[in-house]
Length: 410
Image (cartoon, rainbow, N blue to C red; front, side, top):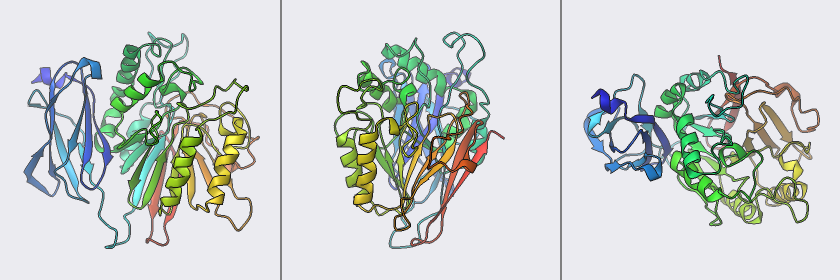
């Protein structure tokens, strides 16, 4: 039995949740048969089983299995079986299905965590000198908040020079980062959704010319559990999900991006197709808050590093379209910058303000940039230590309220 216990490299992790199915994920060390069993917390006598699959090297020994014998609005405990042996864990392994509330009650309270820039040291492949990653106990702090789900805002791991030129390198990097011991309890009982930025896509500051972008997309999909990807049909990882009465638009700021240094053609970060899909989807949305999740800053007015202001024409096109379509309740969620700040754009009192919450870093190096160039930045919200965000949505259907809190590792 101890042999089986050692066959898990990372996870189990809980992926997306819907009313009728939930994704369960695990990675084994080598070839193994995997299945899950689960039962309602309030009714442990009736057990359900997922399919059983055998993990294979080509897919990084990753198993993705669906719990499809579920009812809305329930909590389930689950067990992981490797080669039919139950794996023991000393922390909670639980998932929840979304509530069927519409036409019945007010929407549920929702609480979710956000974070970006998670660097896990591996001395053999890191730059010499002081390690870039630290304070990994921040993942225990997030877990202790017991969020419904966690939203990873990009740079969720850092590809090194050794990694981004081969599929093997990609899989090895993802496998090493995902296996961080401090991360395991959080993976096991919180649902996870993600978008990417340059470091989990390719080299630093990489763009649409990256030669292994199809591999990057494939491995991202292997290791994350979003309910959909590439909703525009043009490649990349653009996706969408709902939680309660909230809508989340997961954008891809890398796959279609013009190189930061290429000024010989019209420049894009998202691309017209992705923006047009987004405007359409925002117009369809009835959510009180519409969270647009993207790897880099959108509202900051300073054209610095790689934020959207370095693509001024396309940024203007997107923000104008949101105004033209009279879309309210837009909140951009992004990372990348190694500090946290809230930006607010309100051209006049007749328009609903747009917000941009930059939340970074989880464990990578921090910086002391005070964003003095960002005229929308709310200076007193600047945080320059390792941190994560907790967003809580409460109140009746017609009067929802969002509270944002930022926590350090303690």
